[in-house]
Image 1 (cartoon, rainbow, N blue to C red):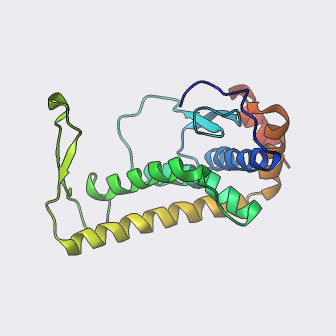
Image 2: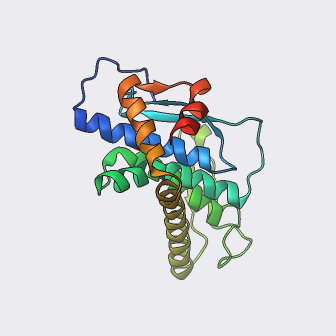
Length: 203
């Protein structure tokens, strides 16, 4: 992500959009029972990111359920949903979030057999070629029809995740989102010890 770019100057409009975006992540993460706990929220720019919301697991995890994956995707969609709710449109700030959510959805369908339509099997043969100086490659071992079904299943999972995030932000005291965003605009970040307090204290 890179070091903090505190000297970067952004417009008040971008600052507000970034604050609501990160507040959306934080609030969705707080409201979902199976997501990692939010430890820091900031609108201080790092690399190409306008800000970020950091979450940390309370314990080591080696196994993931379908529900945990779905909540992880909803958490990723929280920023985009907050932008749409408050500004009526989405920005490019959610590009990395969309990439993460898409990778999770595709892994559920093609790697972990978590698709009711396609059943308990994997799709695509992965070949690790790193030792030869090449990237990991994948050989397709399924038909065009199956590929279309995979795309539809991935799309369905992403739409479900976005709907979950948007519903949480609109039905669970929308004022919370505004207050968290305003706090970020004033103080730039919320540290771990104050994340839960800031969300709980918002009316």
